[in-house]
Each structure stands twice: as structure tokens, then as C-alpha cells.
Image (tube, rainbow, N blue to C red):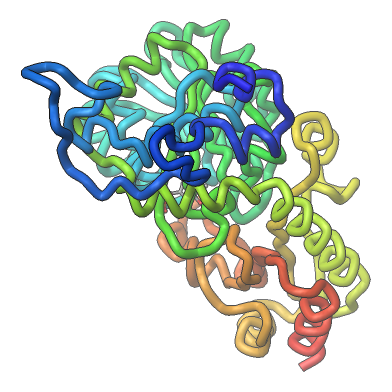
Length: 388
Ligand code: PLP
């Protein structure tokens, strides 16, 4: 099947496994080799083989990953970066100029907020931070003629709020702006924002796409080729690209994304059912619960509801910290999306920098990245930790 067919006609799993790469014509290698080379022999001056001249501009291992990323997001072009934040920085510099305005989530990933607030704003870009689950608040924050980007995460971190991608895309487009969706928490398997009207997808591939907590990376995927050209120019000009080994690991992870996500969701559902019934647990926050305010929107735009679960501990902060200290299968740690389950206390860990601001998260909140261990072991671990 041709590359074009893989991209647009095959099922998700087939695209994840085959798009972006044909077995090597010389050796038949079924997996893209790690092309550990900085430069390429030219057949006479300007006589490039396959367009490769220098590995910041392009490297075959990265090209394979970029093709696969575009295919799984139903986009036209993908770009792989050294980290999620390198992808975001490149995007901001590709599409914004001093004097422009963007709208961001008021509960954006802290690093995204820092990038906008401490790097883009001093450069002359203005922003407003609003709740992305509240479409009217986003509409009110748009400044016609100045707002170039509406930037959302859905689900958000750690409160798992849901933004309505189709409604936000319509809103952004009416105002002449583009919609950016950070799809890190859902992964391309559970949600494909470009098919819902978004213009640009952002990923920290460090999370579910890589999936094994062994590589840091980022990605952008777009449909519009003019936007793609601007990103390609800035990717090469700024140079924050994925190196060949990181691209290899990320691509290897992507091939199993579908089966991993199904099990992440199965295990998360088991954990949610257990937590909901436990007397020491207050609110359980999971978009799959009918009580979640974004449940209907999530049901419309996500295949399933993901592996991230947050919950409040009835005994307050002290008890929440004690639960973190007692789990054994859930490892205490930041990040998410790997095969191993993680637990963290957002108020003192991932979200410590927003303490005392409007973005402060409750002190009794715990966040779980539910991994792929045996579901019964995960539930037993939480039971032990909660019962002390
Ligand atoms: N976006 C989200 C939603 C994230 O959770 C993260 C990292 O945690 C990032 C972006 C930044 O990605 P990276 O850490 O790969 O730079």
C-alpha cells in the first residue's frame, strides 16, 4: 500500500505501524534504522539523495517518525522536536509576532504557561488565560484582529477539564484565529483534533506516544501546507529537533499506542470504580463519569476517556500526602503516560508554582497516571494506601 493510502485510508493501528516508512530498499529492514549521521554525501554540488543534506534540516529516522505522527493525527505534515516545549516554542515563533494576542487555558500545563508568560510575553506577545471548558469565556477573551491563536488542552491537567474542540474551532475561525490543541493527555488514539476542526496539534510525545518513560520529545501536526512551511522553516532555523535515537524510541512507542491506550483506559476504569466506592475518597475526577461536567463533550470527541484519574482524599492534605507515601505499585513521581503507574500530589509537585494564585489546585487532590500493571494489583495498592 502506498504512503498516501496508509495515511488516509487505513485504520489507526495500521497507520501507527506502517505510515512514514517503507522497508529499506537496500537491506529490507522493516524498522527505520537509527541514522546516526550529521551530514550526507552529495552526488556533485547540490546533488542531494532524497533531499538529505544535514541532520538538523532532516534525518531519515526523524522523517519516518514525522510521517507516522502526521498519519495518526489525520494531518498532512508532522514535525518532531527535542521536547514538547521545543515544539511549542517553535509554534509560537512560527505563527506569532510582537503585538499579537493569544488565548491560553487558565489551567495550562505549567511549562506552557511559563513559556507564554516568561518568554513570549517579554517578546511582545499578549495573552489571556481563561477556562477552556467555558466556550463563552474563550469567546469573550478573543480580541478581533489581534488574536491569532486560541490554545487549548483537553483534558486539562490535573483537573481533567474538557474543552469542546469543534465549538472552539468555529469560534477561533470566526475571529480569524487558529485553534491549537495540546493533545498530550488524550493521545492521537483517543482524540484527533484536526478532524474536529483544529488547525494545529501539539504533543509532549514524552507521555503516551513514547509511552515507556524513556525518551523526551515533542510534536506538531498540521493539515494546512502554508502553516506547515512556516513551521518547517522555523524548525530548521531554531533547531530544537528530535535526535535520531529519540526519534527511533518515540516511533517504536507509537506503534503500540492503540493497544496500550485500550489497557490504560481499562485499568483507569477499574481504579475509578474502586475509588468512587471508597469511604476515604471525596470527589473522583474522570471524564468517563457521568457526573463529570465535560462528560458529554468528552463522549463526543474522545474514543474512550484515558488513563489519567484525579481524586480528593476525604482526610485533607495530610491524609493525601500519607496515601502518596504508602503506595508501592504506584510510584511517586511527575510525568505521565508510561507503562508504569504514577501517583503525585499536584499542589506540592507539578503545580507548586501556581500556589497562591487563581490556578492553585486543592491540597487534598491526588493525580494518578494509571499504567499497564495488573488491574487487581493497582486497586489493591490503592486500597492498602487509603486504609493505612
Ligand atoms: N503539554 C502537556 C500537556 C504536558 O503535560 C507537558 C509536559 O508535562 C508538555 C506539554 C511539555 O512537554 P515536555 O515536558 O516534553 O517538554
